[in-house]
Image (cartoon, rainbow, N blue to C red):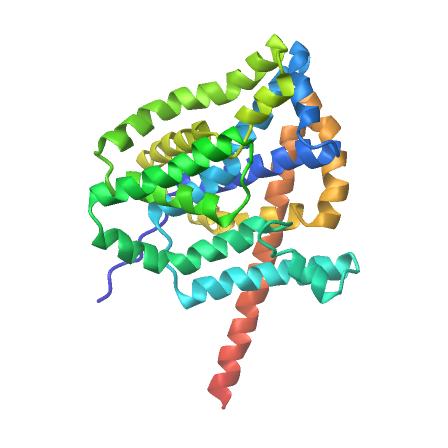
Length: 329
């Protein structure tokens, strides 16, 4: 008798949806203004709109937090899981391409270019392919060797590239987050892990307050904020750790939510499709600035999850027909 399949912790599944909501939020701020992030920084000069800067800063956790979850629990790659990710991506590329009359193969391929539109998908696929080798390598090296490797990667991503204000969007950035998350999960009682969990709470507060404080001071606002509001800010990494660890310790199970959360990537694929975001983000921006736009962001995310459930039913229907066809032969 095979053991029952372990149900996913719904707290973590809800966290995946939250991270996607935060990603959509920063896209609305950044893409909606058509002025990159400099326009957002100026919001901190006005106390009435400073909270938008805090929200934008908090939103930067989205990418780090989403990959952190994958690293913390590990990516156990199977052929089906990789095929599933590719099929979902190609499905939305095809459907949205038809809706917006973008049929050229070059337009579809550009979606998966590692530094372009759906950069996160291509970088995530890269991590998935590396995962089995990473896991085997982690087993073969000592904790000291691991910390030396990790230290070098953290220094590069969270010091050197931080000073350059790179705001990394690449596979190396995701790989660094992934390996840090694996380390603190495997060596949860190490000094680094313990310090990271405690420091993460402080980092979360800093993420909310520092950008506003810098902007209110008004000294080299854009450069200082650009330094802090960056994917390469280590506060995002440590805050993600604390949030994930907290969610892990607060376990509850709900099959419906878990099933809904399985389509969290659809939020990113749909809302960050070029023709969608060109319309959606500028439209949402005024409402987000007024405050109640967050409810609209939630509604859009839930709608994307509902759409993905329809996609999932379609896929299951095709599989069922395929099985019946094979039986008939």
